[in-house]
Amino acid sequence: MATLDAETRKYWQEHPDETVSIIVRFEGDADARAEALQKMGVEVKRRYRLTSSVSGTCPARVALKVARLSWVKAVDADRKLRIFGR
Image (cartoon, rainbow, N blue to C red; front, side, top):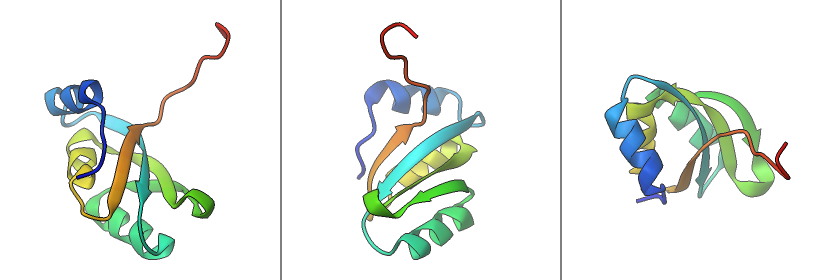
């Protein structure tokens, strides 16, 4: 099972129909993994071959299913970062 922080998991479980932005890090061929994620309902926005990851959007319930895939290393909520109070 992929790493997914407890706070995000709880929120997604409580709001399964909310559309969420995610970053998925995985093992294996980038094209094959992106295609598999799209078939599950993830709208893949970007592919990052160097880090074996993709970003996209999907319902929270789909993101939870993605986190259970054997080839997924981590699923993170794609959030805006604040640096130095900006």
